[in-house]
Length: 300
Image (cartoon, rainbow, N blue to C red; front, side):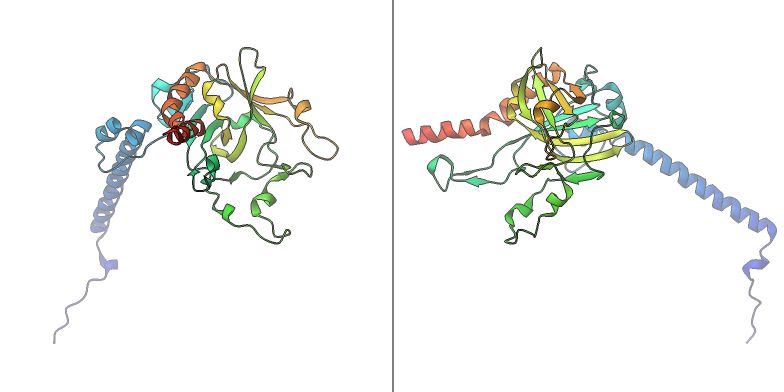
């Protein structure tokens, strides 16, 4: 059998080698160009309207389903540009935050039973949630070094250890302030919402349930629950206080009240839209409405 000589790759002529290298680099540049154009197209089709509205979703050429956003938004021009948000919710009179987002949440609390004297009457309490997007440069008085924590998805509430020393991890992560029942502080010690022209009226505390410091560059995120009366006030302001402590380590609320570390001035244009939103999202499902329906049924 005659064996023909095999041509080893190392015997390739220099001209062929250059030709092959040129072809390879040409392919690389083509792929890079294609990737850049795809990324540009993806970013263009990944703004708020293409992700959360029917019109924008269709216009972007996507098919299938799109996500629903339950929030009422307000934000600055810079925030809108950075995150591809609609211009219609821009209000640069918002001070102390880059953006706020409000929603009525019917999943945060667990279902409770025994309403109106009927042990089988169950309902899920409504949570009124306000999300804050604050510049990291605000240097908020965080009470922990932890960058992120959350109390959303509290399925652990169905468990209760019978050993007092067997503590839930959440209580090990929160900051202890004194020895009372409400001594645990999550992220920030004291946050409240005031309203009115003179800011002398209060709707009570704002309870932090999730936070992430540095969510994006120079942007902190805080999510919390507040009184649902928030939906009906004007000239509102979020106040984050610098805590003043008693000797036992607990927070002295009255002395901390005027120690404002940071405040957010909320535009009334936002509050008007929150009130309109609440008429559909909150009022039909409120405890007062359920009580009214229960009385009407008993009267029949």
